[in-house]
Length: 351
Image 1 (cartoon, rainbow, N blue to C red):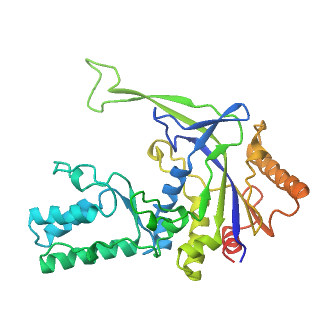
Image 2 (image 1 turned 135 degrees about the vertical axis):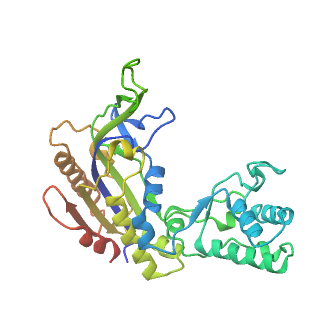
Image 3 (image 1 turned 45 degrees about the vertical axis):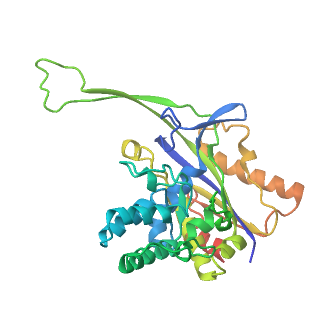
């Protein structure tokens, strides 16, 4: 089995605001002395792992990331007949196992049951928590020290195995990410533009007031984005307890997600859903390397996507010429020319 799989993906997005900064405008980065649009890796990974596609392909093997597990435990205990006082006390004791709580005393918004850090729970851990809640309700006694051992080193949560887990208060249960995802950037210079819009009141007939009922501005941008993904297949299988079949399902689901799922930012305003236009996949045991260098000089060509494909492959060939073979095998899928297929791409990555 080849240790590494690398995916080089080009996707063209129409006007969109998929990933916003603190001012609500599309994120950017300065590369090659010019501004590019950017989609953060965090935004991409969340879009993939929470997609219907990922959930249906990996049903029962996707975790839940939340600060509010203590609140869920409290609600479940009260539903099963435990008194409000005991339910809060026991839920707080369990929640403390996952991290430091936001508040020491009871608050109206249940901050005393919220942990400060997001915790990614595997399905096995969620089931262990549900089983313990049922036991506590049945015997109506506080949890013992043994009851509190709810986190698991070994699990089948594909999203945790792929993207990792960091628990500051329980580092023994950390998981090293097997999939590294770069920030997607436009291959060309790009500008953030402003959409000035108004909304009209349907019941205003204009007899007294002909003005708009609402005026606003919204930032957007468009472009061809380059995305680099590096998969350590050996680590992924190790994170999944050596399960080869589940590892294969996980890789296939990831290929479908990265090529077809877009971040959800402002989708209702722009409908900026897009499939990848070109994917170059490589696999082997050699040290991975991104091909982002192909776009240090921004592309200036009306046929942007085809020019980007040409520059990407030229850079790959140059690396091969200078360093020797950087991969043992490759496969390309090109929507522009109709070459390749998603099924064949997935088979290449998985096999």
